[in-house]
Amino acid sequence: MASTADLRKKYLGALDASDEDMQIVAAVREYIDKEIMPRRRDLEGGWHRDEKIAKETFDKVHKGLVDIGVQRAIYPADFGGLGVGGMVSEMIYDEISRADAGLATHMGIINWVMLPALKAGRLDLLQEFVPRICDDQPHGCCMAITEPSGGANTEDPTLHGRTINTIARLEGDEWVINGHKIWPSGASVADITYCTICTTDPAKGDEGIALIYIPPDARGMSFSKPFEKMGMCWTDTNTEIFFDNVRVPKENRVAGPGEDAKILHDIVGMGRIGTCGFALGAAQACFEIVLDWTKNREISGRPVRARSLHAGIIGEMALKIESARAYAMQVNRMIRSGRYGSPGEPFLLSKCSGAKNYVCDITLWVANKAMELMGSYGYAFDYNIEKYLRDVKILQLWLGGPQRGILDTALGYYPFTW
Ligand SMILES: Cc1cc2nc3c(=O)[nH]c(=O)nc-3n(C[C@H](O)[C@H](O)[C@H](O)COP(=O)(O)OP(=O)(O)OC[C@H]3O[C@@H](n4cnc5c(N)ncnc54)[C@H](O)[C@@H]3O)c2cc1C
Image 1: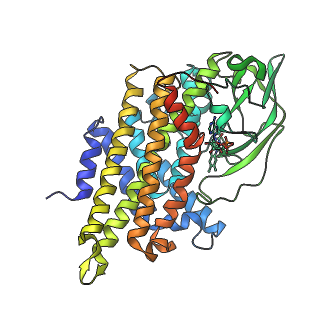
Image 2: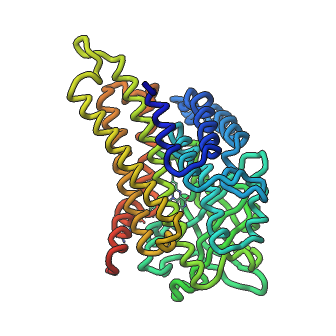
Image 3: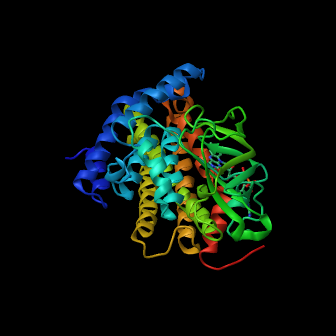
């Protein structure tokens, strides 16, 4: 009989990918199982959060993933990439997140940040960034949306960018940017580009929204110290970003009035559906840990997992993970089919937002139940469950949180404002 691991490979492979694509996913899985799973705890610097251990481990496994092609996976061969399909990329990030959701975040942001240039058909910008992404060095990017006055506001399609306070003013051939962002992943460590959500004038609404790529060494851009957080302690770096008369060429604006607003909502939609892969990998990891632990742990002479109460919970975990994965994959397929509009339009934004809410709820439920089934061992650092539980909470909170997510789900069915 095939093992669960073999069946899982078949399950993923059977979806939409070619055998060649699946070889890439298999190579990623093999690298993760061999090199990252045994070091998961070191990515946080061990129990004492030792920065040196964390950074050395992060650098090593990050480079390892770059060496096997993860960073350049989705880009066309013309740019030096491997040209894998979008669904395969989802599977790759699901696998990375099985080891560490923060590492998946750091690497996944690069593709997210390239999306605006891709959507706008800006070959010049892609030519500037992508060949570097496809080289053999680990890189980082940053998508700066959230401001101190609110993250969900910026993403709210009914507010039309009127709450954005980061102002871009055109002076001759340059944008002059002033403002303040907070929390973005990759802030201060990104070395390729900062895609920054600005407005030329909040009163202009959607027409004012401007997505501008800012180089990492731009004069006038500075950072706070990284935030100390509940999870993703060293893998994902988050700071404030201050823009003080930052000047960039006017060509660095992605598309133009009205078009940038559409792309902003596309990146929100894609960010939400992309989050599903991160969450599912973590849920899968918790499931695998609990399956293994309850096999050997006995209560009155019988393995925990052989007891009907526990078997029922394990069965429910499997059911929830499978249904969540099927939901996310279905929305992914709808986006990639091109038949349902773009991911920032109400119909698909609703699907992306609903899927993120659902998948994150299930992941948190799975991590929590895994801890219950393992008793104090689940609560202990050495068994990893507590790390997944801490890491995955932010997946639910970012990109507007579950409240913004559920409102955007409803917006797919009928328009409303408040
Ligand atoms: C580890 C980490 C990584 C992050 N990565 C990024 C990144 O890469 N880029 C980036 O720009 N930001 C990033 N963020 C920020 C994150 O996306 C925001 O914090 C998040 O969107 C919520 O915004 P907020 O904290 O300002 O809360 P608010 O927007 O103030 O929301 C507060 C509460 O109100 C709810 N709410 C908001 N609007 C409504 C509404 N209209 N109706 C009802 N309820 C509502 C929210 O759901 C939430 O419960 C990151 C944060 C962390 C911690």
